[in-house]
Every structure is written in C-alpha cells, then in structure tokens.
Length: 219
Image 1: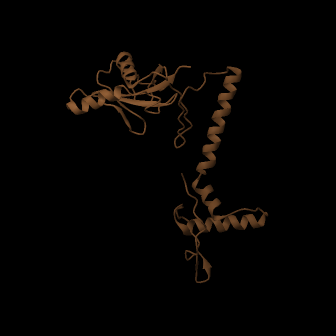
Image 2: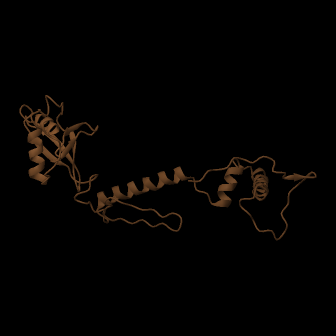
Image 3: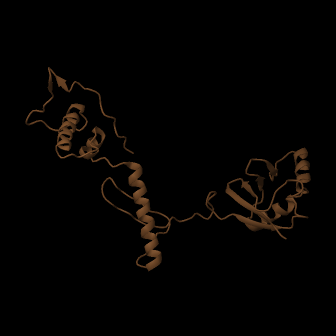
C-alpha cells in the first residue's frame, strides 16, 4: 500500500527571496521535494484563482504520482466483485465465482476464476472423520477402533487440540507404558476425558498425514 507523505517543510524552496524555478528543459523528478513543491504552488495559485478548495501537497502528490489510496480502492474492488456475483446469481448471466479471484492492478485489470483442488489427505482442508458413539459407554478403545477401521491407522496417536495426549499407539513402548496405555483404553470419552459433543481430536501416525476426528454423541 502507498503512504501519502505529509506536506514537507521549507526544503529551501525560497532562496535569496525567490522561489525555486525549474529550468525550461528540466525533467520532472516526482521524488524531488523541490519539484513537487513547485507543482503544488502552481496548483495552489490556480485553486485560489478559481476558488477551488482542498488542494494540498499530499493530493498534489497523488495526482502527479498517480497514487491510489490502497484501502479505498481495495474496498471498492471487493464491493464491485460482490455486486457482480449477486447479479450473476440473480440473473444467471454468467458463470459464478467458485473460490478464487485475482486482481492484477499494476499491469491491467485481470480477474481470473478457477477451482482450488483439495488434497484428500491434506491435514488442513481434508474432510474430518466423523465418529458417532454412545456418550454413556464410549471409551478410548472405541475411538481407536474406529480410526483403525475407517482410516487404516495401525498405530494411531491421539491428541486433543490443546496437545493433551489421549492415547499412544506406538508398539515399541516399554512394558510400563504399554500397561498405562491399556488403562487409557478403558477411559470413557465423556466422563473421564471430558470430551463433549462435536469436540475434535487429532490423530497422527508415522509416515501418514494428520487426521482430524470429530466426536458425535448419539441421543
């Protein structure tokens, strides 16, 4: 986005009582404060002559440098795109936007629409596994069994979104840890682990992408 510079200070625009004047064949330098100040003074004189209000150094820069306020132009683009889509939905005049639009304002107005393909095993956008169980009897063992059956995860490790471990399915655990995990399998999802309806857990396995699982309770 562009930033509109504030009105500069003197910049030695007056030297020996005279304002800086450009030579007849000088090339305009839009980044030179003296050049911009001279243009602003001429614009100010014309504004006073024709009683035009609101001429400032910043607005002079915007006109000379062709600066478009970023926030206002972005809002206008989005508003126009929304109105266009609403018109297409109402009149069926053209293909509707699916999920992507690109605006190339630097070189031209170039808006394209195409569909982003969803990876079936993407950890972020893949559809989660829905597990429906009885809240009164469902245990961690039931959850592990569903994951192993539905997604063929032989060694599922299950975590809550806040990284609280529910089950470690690593077969190389020590005897003590395996005994502890065997006790975890008997814990009830709702009563012991406080997992509520529509809560989400994360399943990760060696050499496989993470899997989101949403717990649904019957009744």
